[in-house]
Length: 256
Image (tube, helix red, strand yellow):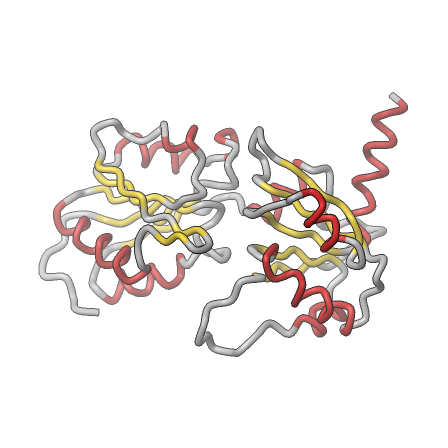
């Protein structure tokens, strides 16, 4: 990356959270209100986008499966250029910038170009979406360990694939990001790692938003359920017996 000849401003990598504007940080909101430029992702919710300074330049750099508004290198170059001419440049990312959000890559490239960077964390969907669905990701009786893992790996990455059997053996609860389309390949590997076919799995789409939807099944049944219900991305998956607490909670509420 060629060093920047002149830098006027600073780039803020801001996590927008999973969608509910009430979960957005006060610091992130303040930055949006004072931003000169906001470059945002596809999964940032409309209520959060509405917080952006009306005079700010707004650029959609979203990436969705099969529909990329901008290549990653193009987005990074855009951040560098905007920091040369504007004081406050916000890179607004869904969830948390450093949890499967490519924030680490963007930070490294910006720093290499001599651009000041500050990270503003956001609540990641892997914690918030299960919570809104009534599923704790840890519990003294059901799960003392949790693993966050991507179900959609980058081509040519540092290793060829996630070791799903090892994860199945080493963690009581597994939270899978961006894995809905790859479940037909992931589930057999989890079973090969020792998980039982009746292990519960919950899929949560658009977590924390008004349109949140959930689908609960087992490793044996969930693929058929997805087809029958037409369940689509974006969604996270929670795998483990801790998912069974969702049903217990609903049964308790029905008796109140």
